[in-house]
Every structure is written in C-alpha cells, then in structure tokens.
Length: 485
Image (tube, rainbow, N blue to C red; front, side, top):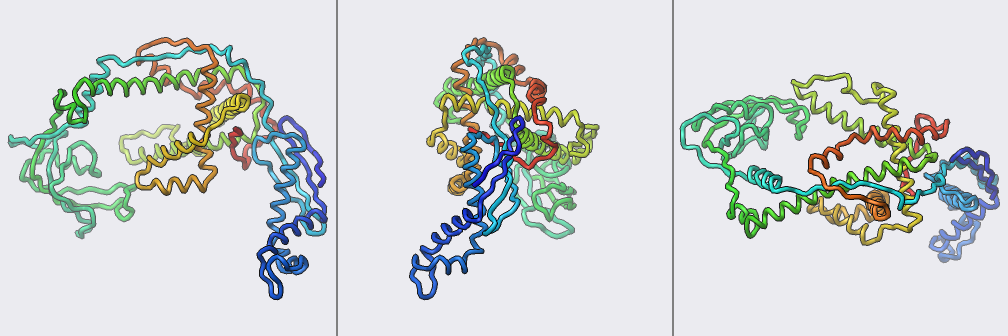
C-alpha cells in the first residue's frame, strides 16, 4: 500500500492511496476463504472447495465488498500512520479499481484543530437565582383552580354567551349525506373555546335552551381528515341545556380533590415546582454566561465542513419554522404579511444567512471546546445514564415503549443523539464546578429578563473564528456534523 500526501492546508489534508493488484487479490482470497467455510458445491464438503472454483463462481460477486473493505482498512491505516484527528468522515473518491491493476483513490480529510483550553479556575461568573414568594404561589394556585373549574346549570331563561357551556345534540352532513364522526349527543361545548371548527361556536352564541340551530361551516384546508379538507358542511344542532363555569373554592376540600392531604401540602408542592422552574432558568443563564466566556477565551480555526453542516441544519429549522408560521397565518384573515414573511433560499438576504452562519461557527467552536475539556478530563457518559435516557424517551410514548427500545437498539446514530446532550451537561457541570461563581438573588422579573436576551446577537463574537474558515470551503458541501466526543 502506498499513501502519498498531496495537500496540506490549514485543517485540510488530501492523500492518494494506492493498493497493488496483488494486495487486492489477497483481500479477494480472504473473502472467498470465508465464503468457502459454508459454501455448498457438488463433490465438495463445506470448507474443502478449491479456491480456484470459489473464485470462478463468487469472484465478481465479492468485488464490491472487497472494495469497501480495502478502502476502509487503508483509510484507517492512513489516519493512524499520520496521527490524524478527523473532524468528520473522510471524503473518498475512487479513481480506479481492478483485480489486476489494483486500487487508487483520493482521500480528503478535515482535521480537528489543536485547542489549548483556558485555565477553567480563572473563570468568574455571576449566577442569578430567585425564590417564589407567597403571591406567586397563590397566583399559580388560582390558575390551577381556574383550569379545573366545574359548571352549574343556568336556571334563568337567558341566551348563551361566550364562556358558557351549551349541552347539545348535533348531526352533520356533507352535501346532504351523513359523514362518520359528525354526530354526537349530550356534548358539553364551551363557547369561545375554539374546540369546534370554523364559526361553529359563534353561531350558537345567543341560543337558548330548546332552540334548534342550523350551523353552516367549512372545514379548514389543513384538517386532519383529508376527505373533509376545504369541504362545506351543515350541522343540525339542538340546545338541550345551558351551564355556566364555576371556579372551585380554594380550600381544604379543593386540595384533597387534587390528591393532597391538606391545602398547606398543596402549596408546599407548588412552591417546590416553581422553585425547580426558577432553578432551570438560573442554570440556563449561567450556562449561557459560561459559553460566552469560553467563546471569548478561545480563538482557533474551525473545520469548514462542520460549520457548513451545522449551518445547513440551522437553516432548515429556520425555513421549517417559517413555513409553519405561514401555514398558520395564511388561514388568518387578520394577518398582514410583511416583507420578512418568506424565508426560502431565494428570498433570504445575505445578512440574514451570515447571521445564522455566525451562530453555526459559535456552536461548532463551543462544541469543540467542550469536547476537548471532556477528553482531557476523561468525562464520559455511562451506560446507565444512556439507558436511563432511553427509558425517559420511551415514557414519552405510552403504549409504544417496546418499539422505542428496539429503535434505539438498532439505530446507533439515534442513540448518539441522546448521548450528546447528556455529555454536554456533564462537561458544563464540570466547568461550573471549576469556575469561581458568585450567586446573587434577584426577583423573577430580572431572572427572566436575563433569560430572554437575544442569543443570535451574541453570535457576532464568533466572527473571529468565522474569518479563519478556509477560503475554499464553498457555499455547498455534502457534509455531516460530528460531535467528536
């Protein structure tokens, strides 16, 4: 095998790898001998078939596997012999492959940069914290009571209004014909809840008990049942009863109805839950401050391919959110479409794309710094932690737990997707334990305000690293991001 370096530029390396026909023939023979252990050929026992016969029958069939094996083995050898640390999978381009002439291919590799991690003990951070007061607990309790309100029958003879609950029988038709799922009885419908389509609830406002109403509606274009999308329907509705919502009284009985022994215990649990939410915001704030500090303290070239892959991921998310937003707003007659409504590639401004590219640079840079901190300090995700993550994911899909477990057993990439955030949190915790942190208690308004700071603006600090991306990175690359942890 001959490995020749043809390019050495910043983080990029290129090699030409050649294998002789003899080396390829040896790999073919190895594969054929493996097949011969179980091959059945007339006149020969398994494992006793001559190599020449195996080659005549299976030689051409194994060439694809031999090529893949030869490329993989030689690529790994080239990486190890040159002590390379690839940032992503090498790009391979086969120039020639023949049983007699051998194999020749080019290998392009982007390397991880050399990172000198700062002295983590020199980090100085401020951590804002907050505690829930009695007023916040009381307001939360009132919201819970409102969401668990009951209703009582309205005895007076009055018209139904928004917020009332009308108990109805309804029977719907499309073009005069009944349709499955469009008929119901004794259904409690809260007017203004928008639980029924179109103007159904609006047309029942003003109705009285005993009234019969003919309600005409049009199903939305994005309705779940394809047969009903954009279809006009008529519902014959009988109003049987009128009920008014009643918020429950917050007392010991209410606490017991919620499963608690008394009101003080309910308030205690609520306070703990609110505190947990505050703590999550506090952690998010200090983590952001930490990442800003790490970003500022490290300056190195980042692999262009990793940045491009990260940017493509971000941009696809941006376009996806924009399309969802437009799909919602196009059904809203009150929506005014501004000049920023379109986020496809044809309409995106250069400045807009550059801002998200800066974010991609920042993410890649910080990911590499955290990965290096983890590598140096031998931080790892344990099998128990990963298993717990799979269990937590399975709990999100009641009744489909078995399928979720099987999915992660068979899909290594998906498993790595669960592993990555666990690893990052462990590294962040390690860095926070090493840093000098001053804790300051504030009110929830200040804590929340800090959490709502616009992160994309902070990505401007990534410009220093962005400028170091290789000039020939190009606008489009078929690459995939790698955690390299």
